[in-house]
Amino acid sequence: MDYRPLDIDDAQQFLKLNKELDESGYMLYAPGERKMSVEEQQQLIHKITEDPSSDLLVGEENGEITGFILMKGNELERNRHAAYLALGVKEAWRGQGIGKALLRQAFRWAREKGVSRLELTVLKGNKTAIHMYKQMGFKIEGEKVHSLKIDGEYRNEYYMYKLLK
Image 1 (cartoon, rainbow, N blue to C red):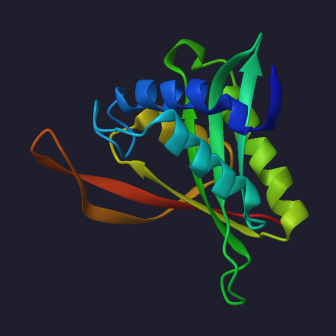
Image 2 (cartoon, helix red, strand yellow):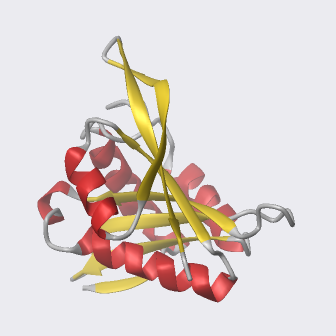
Image 3 (cartoon, helix red, strand yellow):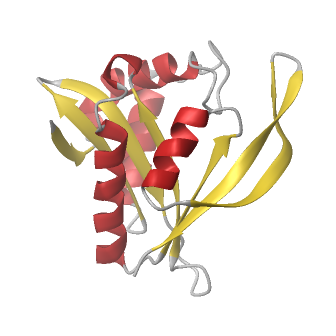
């Protein structure tokens, strides 16, 4: 498995991956809600790659993108030390260590950027993801009540964080 920055040429495959991840019910977009075109995806990739405080890395096997991690940093002095993470792994590749490997890539990126706090949100019912995040040193900081409305029901998310040394 190779890990590398996402490139504009990956836009079509990355958009397809995101739409597949949306079907899991654990991501922000509801299934079928993502209406982004390939051109819009290219623009978003360009915006992220041009932002010195952020990055987007993918796992790749034989030309197939298997997962991604977005590191969204901050430019203001008071929160420049923190970055928000978003992680997704293709269903067929889950349970093979890709999520953990992507998190290790994010830890390396954070240290290079001088980021000492990583944070994320995860649906309270996503026990597999919560378990993995805890294994990788994340702690639950709080609960975001009625954070999302999924299939007509309100769902809570955990705020999680990890401090890097």
